[in-house]
Image (cartoon, rainbow, N blue to C red; front, side):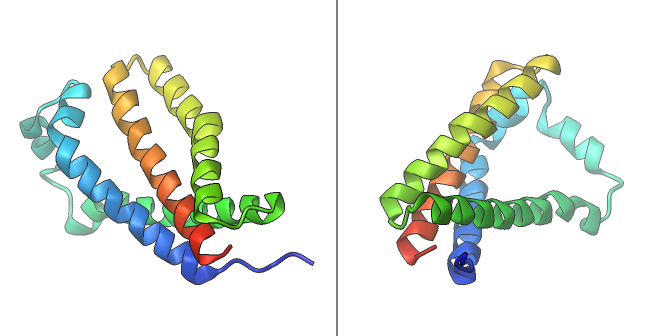
Length: 141
């Protein structure tokens, strides 16, 4: 019989990953904007007519995505017999390497985006998945 997810661990992992993203992009925000070939003024112009609700959608979406990632990684860990923070962090890093980095790199290559954008975005997701794996593993899948 399959074990249920430790939803507390899943939610805590998602919150931690989301907060990490805020700090990460807070520190690299200017470089990230420039790597898109934009300026802060350009972003402000693009967002000028949007409501607060519309501006919050990416933040809500990233939190939902991190809940899904935490639940999926928890399932992978259950089926792999992984149950420690170290094993979770490794599982998160391997999922990032096999699925996230490759997807971001291919999508950005076809869109002719700058390689630095791939490095920054992929670095964020590596951190998020390692954090998620460590917390889910450490608190018990």
